[in-house]
Image (cartoon, rainbow, N blue to C red; front, side, top):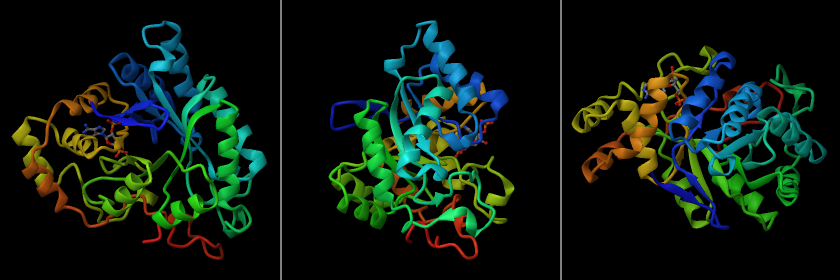
Length: 315
Ligand code: A2P
């Protein structure tokens, strides 16, 4: 499997286990299955509401010493209600407590969007803070401090467009080490990938399988299916792989991280096996044709009447 490299020589396995939407009652077992079957990369976030259950798996697996903490890459993300400089490290410490860890490998600003501290999910415009009130570089400076304190090894962002990365980089000499964004054949984001590559920013793709299990209110009625796409299915047949494996392999082969979510034992194992396939030039060319800049996670849920957030992805 490909590994993503960081400036200090650290590496992250390209394929990790996603935990967004993983139910509390299933995620402990899912993480244990993953770690006991070769996964070395687990992606978490405070807002997924299941970090304590993920932490139970870490405790059990690391305690029995078959898998070592230092051999696993663990990512988490700062929620939007802790962007103020005084709130970042306390939020990170809560995540470390829930995950039962001393440090994270990677901590990301989850969205370029700020809420008031007591707001988990916003109901109206009053629940937000504008980026004038809490500039992203204020949050970023607190992330740098967290790294200096040794609470996290690497810091980055998520859902940042090129203009947002550029403005952050203008205000700091510490470039984000990762940008985690939605990536799949319908949203290939070649310009963003090129920008990140030029600036030594690694990229990880979320929703690689189209996140079919996300809440109905986040779904468009007529949204396309990646897993049922005829080109993906044709290529899967050709290689004796499943459509999911082809989607995961495509991401890994492009050199990005990829974090398919599953709580199903068979699919958790199959998804890691994706690395063993090889897509040829013709497959990659056919998949390149599928791009039409379609987002499953379109960020519209942050655009509430009366607040300052519009076109979050700047596209
Ligand atoms: P399950 O957890 O039952 O395996 P994404 O990673 O894009 O958010 O997609 C997650 C969704 O895809 C979940 O519904 C998950 O269900 C399903 N899934 C995970 N792996 C596969 C696979 N290899 N083939 C088909 N569906 C999959």
